[in-house]
Every structure is written in C-alpha cells, then in structure tokens.
Length: 242
Ligand SMILES: [Zn+2]
Image 1 (tube, helix red, strand yellow):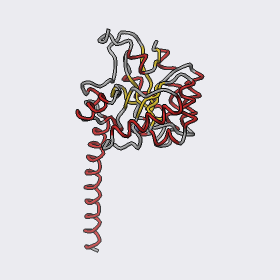
Image 2 (image 1 turned 45 degrees about the vertical axis):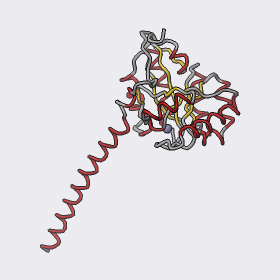
Image 3 (image 1 turned 180 degrees about the vertical axis):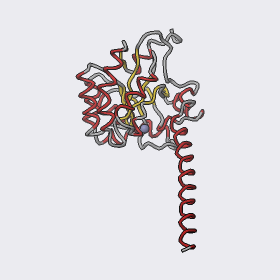
C-alpha cells in the first residue's frame, strides 16, 4: 500500500516536472517563432514609413489547391490585391494557380523552393522558384521572404546580389498557430499601423482558419480607413525613399 502511494506521488511529481519543463519549452519556442527583433533586421523590408493608411497582406507557403483558390475568391469579391510568397515546390505542381494569381493582379514573391529554414542552397532555391514563376507568368520574382523569417547577414547579402529584396513583416496574424478565427482577426487589428506588412499563410498546412478570418480582417481594415496594396505598391509610399 505504502509503495503504491509513493509511486503515485512520484508519478505526480514526474508529471508536474514534465508539465513545467514543457511549459518553459513552449514559451521559449514561442518567443523563437514570434521574431519581433528579426523583423527589424537592417536592410530588410518589413514596413514603410508613411502617414497614409495603407497596408499589405502577404500569404506564405502556397499555392495550395484548396486554400489558395478560397483566398483568391475572397480577395476578388472584396477587390483587394495581395502578395503571395510561393514555395517553388508547391508552385511547380500548381502552375495554374500562379497564372490565376498574376491574372487577378496579385504580386508573386519568392519563398525558396523547399522551405529549408537554414537555406543551405539559398541562391539555387531562389533561382529555381523564380524559374517556375517566370515560366507560368512571364514575371520574375523581386521580393524574397526567407522561411521562418530567419536571415543572416551573409544570406541578406547573397539575396541582394541575386537581385532580390528580403521582405519580412511587421504584423503577424499568427494564423500558423491555428489559434481560432477570432484570435487571428484580433492579432491583426490590435497591431496594425499605417505602412505595415501583414503575415498570413495560404499553404503548408490546412488553412481553414485563415480562410475564415480573411473577410473579417479586410472588412475591419477598411472600416478603420485602410487601403490594401501589394508590396511593390506599398513600397512606393515610403517617405524615406522619396
Ligand atoms: Zn513559410
């Protein structure tokens, strides 16, 4: 009897320990992926200095045969143009979606080919993806978004000399965490400001919550007087570059 009580207690303590460690791990993981400091990496494009109420919606990790068309339908109905950072691997098997993106006035950015966070083949992957986009649309990619937003100084230099601008974000919808539709809308509306770049996803995982939140986000932004633009359009408003 005594032995059972002890082992139960031990079991409880073990659980408590694992729970605490797990909690710390989750918190450290979270701060790793939130990347507030990374978006301010010098030499990257993550916002523009402007008084005008203009923002850019960006979608990563697509195109996806289910979620990208759903997102495109909403953007079309609301007359909004956005920027899509496509993965070469996904783009290759969904070239019709690249064509649709271009036809409907959206901008196509480069997210590498295989979503390798370390970007060991940075230039090769960027070129591979550019080739897929060019073959389908006749346009080259100009903005490059590193997987996870991670970029070292030397990677930044390599990207630049390969004719691309590193584009990060200033408002994270955190839709990648699937926190619920209401939370995604709040994450955007609580943090948005004139000239901000908003991060969302149209691929890589089921994006049902992103699709469901998009209409409300656009409506709420418009209600607050915001206009939505592509990354190239937004960049032209930068008071620093005039
Ligand atoms: Zn990504």
